Amino acid sequence: MATKWRVLDSKSGVIESILEFRQEEDGTYSGYVVKSSPNPLINLYETCIKCPVPYKDQPIVGMRVLWGFKPDGADGLKFKDGHAFDPKNGKTYRGKIRLSSDQRRMYLRGYIGTSLLGRTEVWLRGDGSLTKSLSE
Image (tube, rainbow, N blue to C red; front, side, top):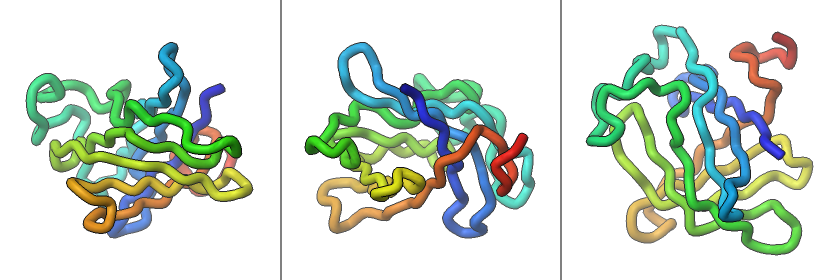
């Protein structure tokens, strides 16, 4: 089952995109950008300008930005051993994910090397709209 998440800009708190998190055929989980905000405050381009090949100049909508996440535990609230790609800076990070107990918040920890030297972003579960309300 795929779930949609509102990706918030960590500086402004503005919704920058909607990501769909879903299970792949190999049992791992990936995330794809399904909508991108037109809000000029977040400076997100339509194509991946600062990105290395094969992402260079590719549309951000439809791009796989999370991949390889494996379930970690029986409760279905943790995922490990994944990777996260940031189209704003063109960098790829190792990652792990934790869902809140009510599954309304996703905590993505992105890091290089050890997770102690990383950053956590909080994403909100939603219906796919780019507004703060739950209606389109």
